[in-house]
Image (cartoon, rainbow over all chains, first blue to last red; front, side, top):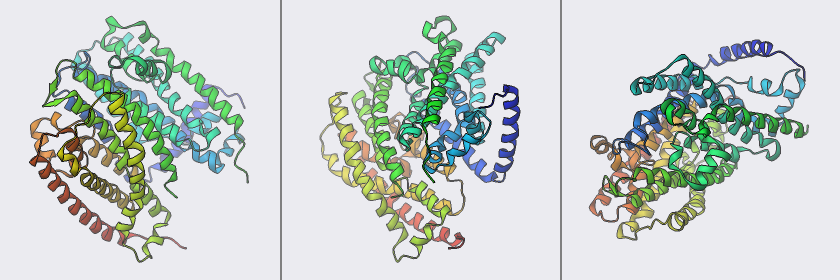
Length: 267
Length: 250
C-alpha cells in the first residue's frame, strides 16, 4: 500500500466526491424525496418525546429541552456515518458478487478508496437539522458557549461519530467471513435508536452493555452531559472523547483482517 | 425466493426486539416513577401495550414496498403482468406465509418473555375473542400501505424516501411506540379516525383495555372501513400506475 500524505488524500477525496455529487445531481427528485424522508424519520422520535413529556415533566431528572439537546447531539453524531461511510451498507453485495476485488488494485488506502465511492447527500439534511436543533435547544436552555466549550464540543462530536461508525462498520465487516452480514448489520443499526435515552434509567446488565460492550451511551448521552451538567459529570463521561478513537482502532484492525482473509468468489 | 435476504434480517429483528423490550421496560419504569396511573393506564397496561406494539411492527412488516419497487426497476414485474392473476391478490398472498411464520416465531417468545421475565400479566377477557380478526385486518392495512408505496415505484425510483416517510408516520400516529392515551386530547380525537391507529391501537387495546366494551366495536368498525377503503384505493392506484410502465427489451 502506497504511503500518501493526509493532505493528498483530502485533495483526492474532494476530486472524487465532486464528480460523484455532479452525477447525483441528475436525480434531483430523489434527493428531495430522500431528504423529506430523513426529516420525517428524525422528527418521529422527537414527536414521541414530545407526546411523552405532555404527561410527565421530567424523565429520570432530565427535562424535555435537555432531551432535545441530547437528541440533537445524537443526530449530529450519527451524520458522519450516514454521509461518509454509507458505502459500507453495500459491502455485503460487493463481497458476495466479487466486485470488492477491484479495491485491491489501486495504490490507495483501501478503506479510503472504499468509502470514497459514496457521499450520501440526504445525510446533509440530517446534519443540518441536528445542528439547527442543537442551537435551538442551547438557546432555550441558556447554555453558556465559551470558545473552550465549543472546542470540547467539536472533539466530543468527532469521537461520538467514531463510536457510531465503528459499531456499524465492524458489523458490516462480518460480511468478509459470513457473506450475508445483513442480520448483524441491521441489529447494529437498530442499537443506535437507544442512544438518545438517558443511560441512567437502565440498570444491571443493560447498563453494562450500553456502557462497555456496545457503548451506544457514548454516541449521545455521556458526551451531552459535558454541556448540560458540566458541574456534576462522572469520570466515565470524561472518557467520551477517547472511546471513539479506541473503538475505531479496533474497527480498522477488524477491517484489515477481513480484507486479508477475503479470497473472492471465483471467476 | 427474492425475500430470503429480508428473512434472515427478520431473525435479527427478533433479537433487536428482545433488547427493545428491555429498553422499553426501564424507560416506562422511570416514566411511572412518581405515579401509579398516567392517563388512565397503569405501568402493566402501558408496558404490555408497548411490548406487543413493537412486536407487531416486526410481524406486520411485509417488505413488499422494497421487493415490488425492485421488481419494477428490474422489469421482473412484466412476468406477473402477463399472468391471468389479480395482481393485488397475488401480492397479498405472497405476504401471508411470512406473516403466519412470524406470528408464531416472534409473538409467542415475546409473550412468554413479557409474562415470565418482566412479570406482566395478560388479562383474559371477552374482547380477546376479537383479536384474531383485528390482527388480520391490521395485516391487510399494513399490506395496503406497503403495497401502495411499492406501486409508487412505477412513478419514481426514490422509494427510500417514501418508504421512510410511511414508516415514520405509521410508527408515531398509530400509537405503535406510545399509547394513544398519552397524546393531547385534541390530537387523539383526530387520530382515532385515521387508518394508522387501526393498525396498532385497535388490536392492542383489545388486549390492554379489557374493561371497555362498545368502544372496541366502534374501533373495529373504523378498522373494517379502512380495510375496504384502502384495498379499493390501492386497486385504483395500480390501474393508474401500470399505464406508465415501460420495460426495455427482452
